Length: 465
Image 1 (cartoon, helix red, strand yellow):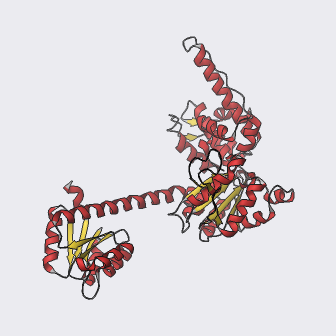
Image 2 (cartoon, one colour):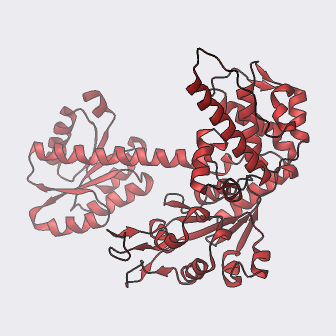
Image 3 (tube, helix red, strand yellow):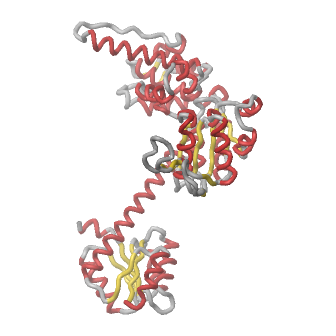
């Protein structure tokens, strides 16, 4: 326990030498690393090299008061947590300090147990803040611009455009075929923007039942409809201060488009069954694999909503437009799935790679990802060869299963059923260019069921467009 405390650095600031000495003794005995300063200016100087995690500062000091001292040190060390020492007569000032960002206050005269308890709690807050910041850095690394693979000129231009868009707060429309990485682009825009530390809410417009769209977007009050047993927060409210990503926006029915338009215009809505207006500060990013201009012409998409969404446009290119990136994607997917599938295949033969480069990938990067997964499952060698990619030439031909009496009839039928189901799903996805909505319709199952089946059979791991 003491070893853990030793890493915690506490800066004690008080113009009374006696108070400084007592506090330093108490905290040193508890295992903390202590530095002291007689006033705010000395504290500022010492904080540069000491890098305090916790500040215990007297409220009333000459030259620079305690609150100002804490604020100025936090400019250099934002994660540092501040505690104010105050006499009974200035408690109101200490309370005001807490409202301004100081963690807590301790009244003089104090006892040892009180000091140690407040210090421990404050350092717990420091450690939690550190953990949150580390998590945010990991999210930035995982979903930022570096997560968009591609070294070709075209992909470099796309990444440059994403960084440009991220510096603004304007509404964005991302266009591109299914499987081109539209969700990856939306995530990168958010995590490269000033909103990166705030929520990113992802809404799959195609998967929401028509009668629940308003409730999903804006929430509802208890009793708003038959099954509304309690208040529900909508997705726009969840995204307040952050970004909302409306995937497959072209699937929204016209009535829902009208309600969405009002939110985009006024950044205000009411919960279903409610009357109070709720204002939100939300950046909107929408994506579609449809030609929305054509949808407007045919009356399937509101023209005014289209122009509201089309403030900034980003087009994600089809894979056949940047085939030079295929080797990079293949290497990435091999690295991702090799261990997961328990395979030793570390690379791919030049002939097999050339076959992949020459193919017209109608399902784009997602289809290539699925092809690498299937090839890994097929191969028994250390390198994927052309023979492991025969399914690309033969469509979705089902591989025969060998029946074993030891295996038993029931497991055999189960394996056969799952293999057939997987192949039928792949066939439907390939025929619809990996459009999940169209594939689900073709298979006569719900889009959610298709999504779950794709995860079950390792078909793209549920990666969004």
